[in-house]
Length: 152
Image (tube, rainbow, N blue to C red):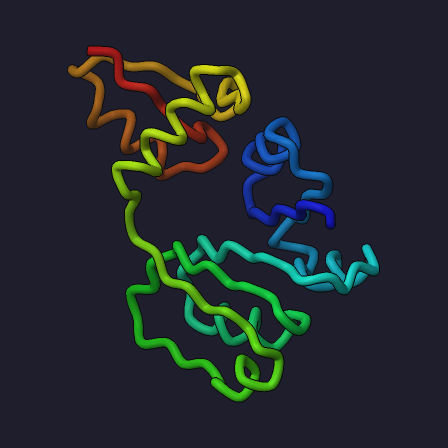
């Protein structure tokens, strides 16, 4: 099925297209799930929830088709609730992740080094060690940067 990316930032939506997304959705004006329904695909879906706002997991569970998978990488800093019935009735998989294993880092590095994955569209800046604080400040403004490399 199609890869659909949703973000508030126009720059990050452009990056998503450059990285291979088929469709991008402006999170401020369009509903991700409505965009997905317009595509007409009902096959099992994998959704990466990377926002971390209350209610989004429940919304994803409500909208997901049967046998879908929700991978939660967004850290919600508040109490959140969801209805388990959605997951049970649709046989959804809900996975929470926080970090990468050494093997995943190794595999990712191989994919980058051998050219299978081109990360160039994500790299929007490079800084030396003396500019790290400013880089973090810039990353807090999503229309400026996506990823910044630190060059020691």
